[in-house]
Image (cartoon, rainbow, N blue to C red; front, side, top):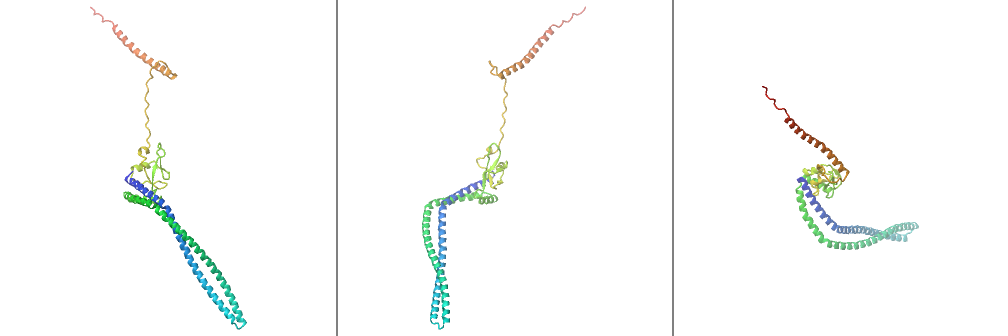
Length: 318
């Protein structure tokens, strides 16, 4: 792969280590955070109940003042009734007194309900405060138990951060922005290695979404310095160490030339019908060859004999 892809893989590995350590820290402190949330909820409930109690107490106080003022007014009307000089004045005071009593009774019933609500809120507050004390003690115990472990994990995280920052600095700005965007989207899984399911076929898939990829994806990643994205999940693809070219690229096997077998050696005994036929064919082929050879040999002595029998030169005439 090109230098950009190599730097991205190093950044991806450093980011994975940092996220893994952060995940272990979050898992360790999860129970503590849950306990802290319980304490906060109890505090919120206590605050809400306290505010409601104050409101009810203020309302009860105003009703109590209203009752006292109405009682005073009724007593005043009774005094006027006793000093009334005419029957008309007496009846008027009586009607007003009865009306005042009816209104007072309504306010008194409301005051009783408010008082009951105040007592209920006070009991609830007492119970909530008791629960809060218990949850606070439990939270303190849990924090003391995980202090050492969380300190070790935080130290590990602080040690990984410089490595991640150095790896990020080695990546070009445009590629780093794409990586960070995908890391936020996929919770750190910004890149995905390609795989070759069948070693006999030159086909590749994305390990994140198992989507089939084009055949030249390996060649592009291996020979070019460019970002290649999965067409399905849009993650950045890269070549893992366990997929070298000798395994990734399919090469057809070379055909071996078959050796030409010579004639079978003579054996004393034929073992099959095929051997019999082979031996017969060989004898048939050898007979014409022998005949031709003997003919050539016989023709050469004949010519020599004829040359020996030529007539002698006749004698000269006188």
